[in-house]
Amino acid sequence: MIVKGNCIDLRPATLTDRQRVYDWCFQSETTKSHSGPPDYPEIAIASYQEFCDDYYEEYYFTGAYPEKGQGFLIMNNQEAVGFISYSTYHLKPSSAELDIWMKDETNCGKGFGNDALCTLSDYLQEELKINLLLIAPANKNIRAIKSYEKAGFQRTDKAMKTFLTEEYQLQYGYGDYGVDGTAILVKHLYN
Ligand SMILES: CC(C)(COP(=O)(O)OP(=O)(O)OC[C@H]1O[C@@H](n2cnc3c(N)ncnc32)[C@H](O)[C@@H]1OP(=O)(O)O)[C@@H](O)C(=O)NCCC(=O)NCCS
View 1 (cartoon, rainbow, N blue to C red):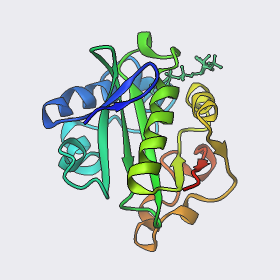
View 2 (cartoon, helix red, strand yellow):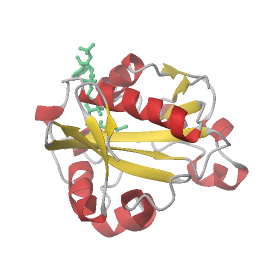
View 3 (cartoon, rainbow, N blue to C red):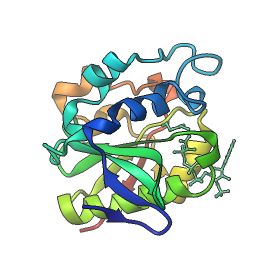
View 4 (cartoon, rainbow, N blue to C red):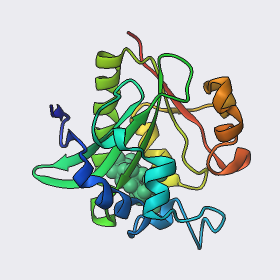
């Protein structure tokens, strides 16, 4: 199943993609936009094992639990240019949190992120009846915030905890960059 966008398509990620998806996130030239020094010394660069155990369990790459989350390769023609995923397991009903990264700088700033976000939004609205999307980059990740705003997300003053089920409030309630360092953006979808 391919989800078609305007200039990109979303292809469900498979287990053979897991290592390169990790590399694009934590071992590439785009890593410095969200983790590690010089801008994010407090955000550790995860190992592949940590990525698999703590962030991206197998089901993101098998599609085994679409009601909990899934990952997609962002395809420009036949080339994989990045990764986007949604997760719902930690949120109140009918909401999903998105994550996205491109594999290198060459593929940033070309509108692929915007298209991928809009395409996944439509898919989640239609297929899973999701009506609230959440994305939570660092406050200082200006390029990401700009791209998300162009895709229909708006900054909110609400705390991360507002969106989480009680079980996950302690674990995720402060955002990846802390209360002051995390920008919370939401997009309402009307079913
Ligand atoms: C964040 C990301 C997914 C956005 O996707 P993208 O395809 O690059 O974004 P788009 O091209 O849709 O939009 C980017 C916007 O930011 C602007 N922009 C580009 N570089 C910028 C910069 N250095 N500072 C500020 N704005 C910038 C672009 O001009 C564009 O806006 P415009 O269309 O009005 O000109 C992508 O840049 C990326 O992977 N970055 C590195 C990893 C990352 O930060 N991931 C997010 C973690 S939460």
